[in-house]
Image (cartoon, helix red, strand yellow):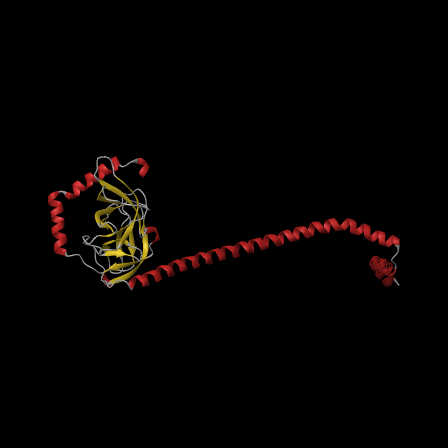
Length: 301
């Protein structure tokens, strides 16, 4: 008896709780009276706002996770689109190079631009062909649109090119429609403009006229596009035009090039260099350019 009493003392609270819980469940299930329905409605009215808050918080957390996932997917898609655009532009340029290759029989080698320095006046670019590909200093560099520059330094696998957008670059050229000769250079002022000089101002120069390399270039074959006339004016005190050209092959858009495997006659090059040195032509040209800079109208820049 003492043991049974001890067991009852220890478990009676659980037994009573279980009995009451069972009675409550039976009543809840078996009876559906107005009072019970009212109690249910009241309990739902109390708990619904709390449940709604927790539901909104859960949806907010889910929305944050979905937004992060969408951002990651958007970044991946943007990268894919950029790569596709780059590949498309590269394919278009390669197709144009192949079409251009069919129009000329000059020996040449294709090179890819691997580095550009187009932030200074003495700009340079590097291509991935060099002396092992028969590339030598002084060779002309072009693409399917026109002249790019000339080789100034080579190694076994690379070559450095001085582009036409370099203040030390010069190329004899002619206005194709007029057959008039001049010299094209870059004044270092604008990356979308070259300057042609020494065309007399009586010539009917008009915007849109094509300027090509001259037969007297000594570096480039004749007839390679240099650019198209944008504007022309005669500076005060001069009898020739200052002609601004839109480059045929802007350096910022050049990705692949042809190096034409043509070599200037070394005897001719040495003789001409000696003549320029003896006559002080380089000094005279520098002085003429300085005067041009001083007389160029500001609104034509």
